[in-house]
Image (cartoon, rainbow, N blue to C red; front, side, top):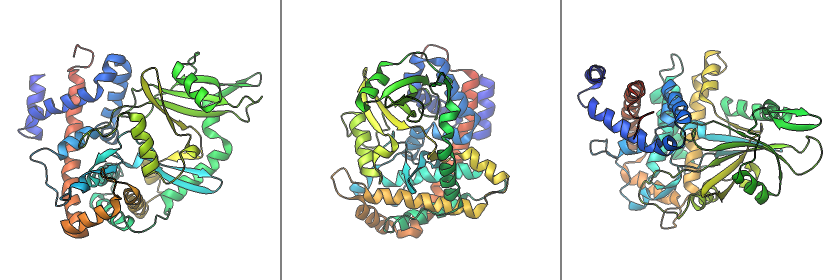
Length: 419
C-alpha cells in the first residue's frame, strides 16, 4: 500500500498523501450513514463513482465546496456584498439534475433535485453547473470545448438575470420529443410492470408495503398496488428509494401510475443551518426556485418513522438529461458542438432565471443583489476570466481525485472494516 501511494504521490504532486487523507475523510463523512446501514449497497454506489468521472463529480459535491473554500483556493472578485453569499441556491445544479415535464403541450424545465438547496453564494451554483458541463464535455470525443462551454454558461447566466427563458436548441427539442413519444406509449410504466388476471404488478417487487409508503398513500388518498426497491442517482444511491405502483381504486390498469419515493438527506451547510427540518427546506426550495406547480411533478414531502421523504412521479412525460445518452448522440453524429453550446447557454440562463426569483436570507430578492455584485466585481468580462481559471483548476483537481479514489477503493481503507 505504501509503495502504491508513494508512486501516485510522485505522479500528482508532493501534497498527494495529505490529499488522499483529505479525500478519504470527506468521502467517509459523506457516506458513514450508509456504511452503518448497508455496506453492500454503499459499495455499489462507490463503484459507480469509480467507473465514470461524471458520476464521481455527482458524488462529491461537498468535496467541491470544501475545495473552493480552502486557504490556497483561487479567490473570487465577487461576493463582497454579504447578501451575495446568502442567496437561496440549488447547491448542485449539474446538467443531469435538470429535467422537463410535458403537460398538455406545455413544457416546464426545472432543477429536479433540490436536496442540496440552502442559503449560500450564488457564485457556487454557477461554478457547479460549469464543472458538470465541463466533465460532460470531456467525455465527448475530440470536442476540446471546455473553455467555450464555460463562456456559454457564463454569458447565458448574465443574460438570464434580466431576460426571460425561451426553451430552444436541438438537445432540448429532442428531449421534448422523447417525452412526447414515450409519454404516449407510457414507456416507463410498461418497462417496470406486468399484468396477471387483469391486475398490474411490478417486475421487481418487494412483496410488502413499507410504513412510509402506506403513510404517503394515505396523504395522497390513493391505493398502493405494489412496491419495489429502486437504486438510482449517485449521491443518493444508498438512500431508501421505492418505486410505487398505485391507482385511485378503479378496475383495470388505465388509472395505474408509478411514483418514486426517497428519503431525504442533510445538505451541505454553506453558511449556517437555516431550516429546522429538511421538509421545510425542500418545500421552501420548491416554492422559491421552481416556476411550475409541484402537483404536476407529483412532488411532496412528509415525515415517516423518523425519516424525511420526498416523492416524484415516475412517468415518461417527465424526462431528464443523461450524459451517457448525450455521449452516444455525439458519437453517432446526431449532435455537434453547436448543439452542446446552445444547451450550455440555455442551462446558464435557466439557472440565472431561478436565482432572479430567489431570495436572500434577509428576505430580499436576489436578482438585484447578484447584478450589483457582478458589476462591483468587474462585470461580465471579469466573471468570465475568473470562471475560466477556477474551472480549469476544478477540472484538474477532479481528475486527480478520481485517480486517487481508485486507490482508496482498491485498498479498502475503511470499506468493509471498522470505522
